Structures are given as C-alpha cells and as structure tokens.
Amino acid sequence: MNVVFAVKQYISKMIEDSGPGMKVLLMDKETTGIVSMVYTQSEILQKEVYLFERIDSQNREIMKHLKAICFLRPTKENVDYLIQELRRPKYSIYFIYFSNVISKSDVKSLAEADEQEVVAEVQEFYGDYIAVNPHLFSLNILGCCQGRNWDPVQLSRTTQGLTALLLSLKKCPMIRYQLSSEAAKRLAECVKQVITKEYELFEFRRTEVPPLLLILDRCDDAITPLLNQWTYQAMVHELLGINNNRIDLSRVPGISKDLREVVLSAENDEFYANNMHLNFAEIGSNIKNLMEDFQKKKPKEQQKLESIADMKAFVENYPQFKKMSGTVSKHVTVVGELSRLVSERNLLEVSEVEQELACQNDHSSALQNVKRLLQNPRVTEFDAARLVMLYALHYERHSSNSLPGLMMDLRNKGVSEKYRKLVSAVIEYGGKRVRGSDLFSPKDAVAITKQFLKGLKGVENVYTQHQPFLHETLDHLIKGKLKENLYPYLGPSTLRDRPQDIIVFIIGGATYEEALAVYNLNRTTPGVRIVLGGTTVHNAKSFLDEVLASGLHSRSKETSQVTSRSASRR
Image (cartoon, rainbow, N blue to C red; front, side):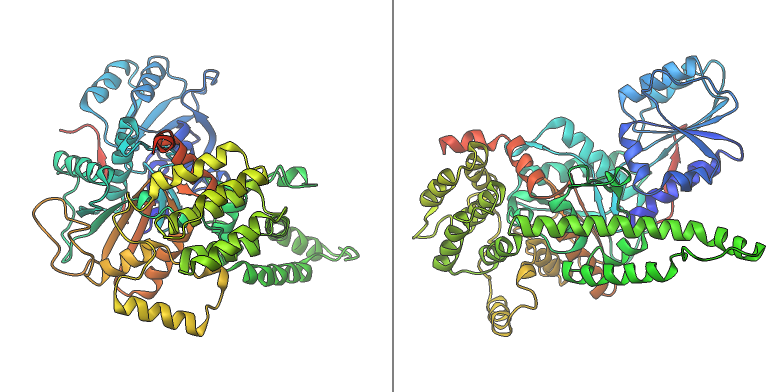
C-alpha cells in the first residue's frame, strides 16, 4: 500500500497510452498539485511531454502537432472547459482522464461537443488525492466542518478523495468510525454509499482478512498538532511550512535568489529520503557528512583539463556534481534556518514544557514552568498562546486550574486578542466535553506500569516523549482490542481476525508526528500495512486556522496496480 506509487503509476499509464510523439499535459489547479507531488517536470519531459498547461488558461496557443493528455477532476467547471475545448480543439488528439467517477450525462455532453472527433479516449484514473509520503495522503482541505458538522461541499470532496484512494489501492474495506464524532459517522455512511452504488468498481480479489477503513476526528486529540516537532520533515512543516513539497524561504535573512523556494521530495532527494524521519540532532551530523562528501567530489579549481579524456570525465561528472551541489546548498540553508528559529524563539525550553504538559501529570510544576516562560521576552506570542492552550486542554477540570491567571499573563505580555480568544476556541474544539477518549490518564494497570517505567529509566529525548493518541488507537486495533462501543463498525458485519491492511483517515487533518508513528508501526509490525490520510496535514498554525474556520470560537464566548475504468460503459 504505497500511495505515491499508486498515483505515479496512473500518470505513467496515461502518458504510455497516448503513444509516441510530442504531448501537452492539460490539468486543473488540483491535478497540477497531484502530479507535481510524484513527478518532477524534468522526469515528465523525458516521456515526451513538452508542455504543461492549465485547462482554465485563456490564452493557450493552437498547436496541432501536439497530442493532449487531459488529467482533470470531474467537476462541472472542468467539464464545461472541456466542452469549449472540444468545440475548438487546439491540439490534434485528446486523451481524457478524470481523477474520479464521471457521470454518464457528462460523458454524453463531451461526446456531443466532439464534432471534429478528436477524442481518442475517456477514462477514470483514481488519483484524486495528494500523495505526501508513501504511507501519507492529504486532500489539502482547510476548514472542513462548520461547528461539529460537515461543510457539505467539503464532505462531497472528502468522500470522493477517500473512495478514489480505496480504488487506487484496490481495497473494498469494512468501515469503523469514532462514535463520539457525528462527522466521522456521516463520512463513513457517504463512503459506504459510493461503494454500494459503484459496486462493480470495488469488485477486487477477496483477501482472507478484509481491509479496514478507520475514520477518526481531530477533535479527539487537539494536543498533537499544537506541539513543536523535532524530526526533520515535521520540523520543517512546523517552522517553515510545507505546501505540496514546496518550502518558502523568501523571508530567510540574506537568502540567495535561487533558494527563495525549494522543493523537498523524498522521491528525488536521497538526503531528504534518508533523513526525513530522523531527529534534528542527527540531521546536524548527517549534513556535516554530506558537506564533507561534497568537498571531496568538488572539482579542484586548479584541476587541469589537459586531455580529451579529462574533459570528457569532467563533463560526465558535472551533472551529478551540480545536482549534489544543489542538494547541499538546499539542506544547509533549511537546517541553518531551523537552527536560527530554534535559538531565536527559545524553542528548546518551550518544547520541554510542551512535552511536560502533554505527557506528565504534575500540575504545580507545569503551571510554574508555563508562568516562567510567559515572562521570557524571547518567547513569541504564538508560542506563549499555545503553551496556555496545552495547559487549558490538560488541566481543564483540575481543582487548582489557574487558566484565568495565565490569560491575564498573556494579556500583560501583549499577546493579541486573536490568540487569546483561540485558547477558549481550542477547548471548545477539543476539550474534555467533546473527546470520546481520555487523552491524559493511562487507562489500565499495564499502561500505568509502562508510564512508571518510562519515568524511571528517563526518556532518551525529553523533546520527543509524546506519542500521538493515534499510536495507542492503532496499537489496540492491530491487537484486536479496539473497543467496538467507542469505534463501532458501520453495518452488521465485524472483522473476526486482526486487520492487516488499515487505512486511517482523520477529519480535521493529520500531522507529520502521526505519519511518523504510522511509519514506525509499519516498520516494526510484520504483516500489517497502514496508510494515514487527513483532510489536510497540519502544523500548529494551520490547526488553529482549522479551529477558527469551524466557527466554534464564536460559541466559546457564550460558553498497487493501476485500477482504472473506461468511462464509456457498455
């Protein structure tokens, strides 16, 4: 179950099916992002695709010597653009691929518009999601719910994205959902409806143990997205922001022009692929090794190119050298900026207190440490506010709760009203009243013993003590211990055996910390394959935007192989 491979296969197949000759790839805003996550422009150029265009671009030239490969979401808007295109075709022949199920009436409208008979093929290729890592996908939706209920437009898009994911992985799953979330139940029902309606598409070879789709709600764990991160990919997203593998470095002091935006993709950056899940301390020493390796391979300035053989060797090695040079300068810049921010914002100290708030149960120590950091001028208003949010979530019902005092401290620190209001909004979003589970206290003797032993031997790294709640949920699921009264099955049938292929989807967004937990479970649990998805992939800033978008703050004042189908169904 590799989502990057699944999307990559679809795109390769589209290009292969169009045959030899020069091609243009015609996309919409969303499919442009989907393609860019799995292929670089230079890789696609090698497959005779010489032009990349948007279907909504008004000033495209007529180029009858090009074949057009259209990869589009099946929206009304895109169908209308295609109808206009086919009435006055700009290219010689059209291969049309929709990223999801297209209605018969839309296919009929396209056929009627194709008076010049330029359409060679109309198919459905289910790459309707953003493949972030092999085991992580996103739909890039921010603000999926209004209050506790779905925004109808986003429910429809999420249903499409999730069913496309299932089709691309060839899975027809049993479905479980988080009972405490109305939104989780609603999405489970919508996915089930599509599976029932499009039953022919979901007729895959039966496996001994059916796959399982588990639908969760971000409200159940508002702690994870609020924490600072210390593994490379998660840290880059937290401090710099990753948008479809792109990182905006334009605000970095003294940045050179060619590094204002960089791409971090494990598919074509070996250093990133090997280091994305490692701790920041390890990244530092690995980048030093990368630099030393680079210095050795660097062509000597005084190197004399005396013979033809010397010149030939230099020319042959130069592309590799240039690529390595780009990799080195990119990672040195990114790691350098992360280090600068860590030091400037006093994040080591901030993170230590965050971890204490998330993992320990000592109220007076936590309160003292939060108060101390709120007095520190190096702690930004954003970091100050999220420390208070973590305190509020953990000690919401503690007998000595000191939230009013901390709110006063925030005001005295000059923290803006926007962030102060978000404290109560976060409790409204993911507080004790909303959660279906207990985030903080271990539930049984085994868990209590584990926590005690963990405390005794000391954690290897105080900055990464926290395990997302998802880890415990999946651990229980894999062992067949996930309670059905909290996570019921949709429909009458239940899974007799322990699940092997698991797709987890988090409404309201997943995080890179959760993706890391899934990556580690996949590595250490033989026979179990897990893919994680979310409406988006959050850092703390985007999570707070999600909370704002839900509108709950206003109330808080008051209180593997390619699966495809030809669209011409006969």
